[in-house]
Length: 348
Image: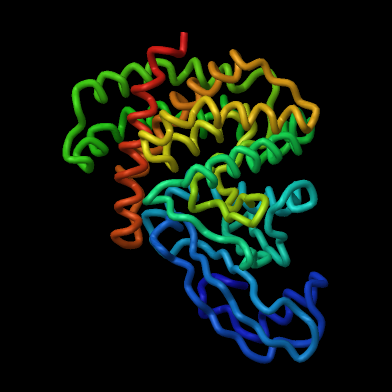
């Protein structure tokens, strides 16, 4: 029903929101503001302002398929939209943690297309993934990630969901080969890398398969998969996670490594890492989940090896919407490669 922003008409919005029980009456006016700030690479986002003849939300966030053909090919290949639809439809995360509710959604298996109308968390603040997280935002993220992971910790249902890949799924395990295919292009996009970064990246690649297999065993949870600063919103006493296109089944600390690698300035990551892992572990403990500190550090370091292909392939193949998006991809790659260089010799 909703393929692009022009489809967000009063009649269609009325129909779906009333049908799901999110509203009564009829939408009388619609105003749509694009939320494309260069960070939404794999979808189209807009805030839709509504007035009602009746009762209903004053605004919703619409998430529709990307309009960039090259990015749609990536989405289709990795099943990203299918995963996000499944998270909202089958797992309903807002019932367990702070997360936007899906007010209405649709998914068509035949076409591989769908859409979402989400609760608008307007009272939460966005952050700047290009600039990097503040200390306060970083600690809030650790709490949010730990609570998210605790909510799905060893949930047996996760292994039964056909749309949710585990670490050894070819879609995930195949990222090692994608690194091989895109490394040269990444280096070109970065105007070269230092010899020590080159050596660390190749050493990290050699550990990738080991990380894949270790992360498919032991305690597992619902991994967000794309826990970067642009996919978080910050309230006065907690943070909320958004965007579940890269959801997976594995060890939760991957999300911690992913966030620290891409959303912290390198000097800040080095300074904060011990405290951030402590905060993550302490928050899990508050939920009754005890994690061995040494194992947590090993998994955190392996998480950087598992993440290595992501910033490399992203800068090589993802088409940014604007210069901010391009700058994010450059910083994300340099930060991620620096994190691999810092930890690759410490994996053990």
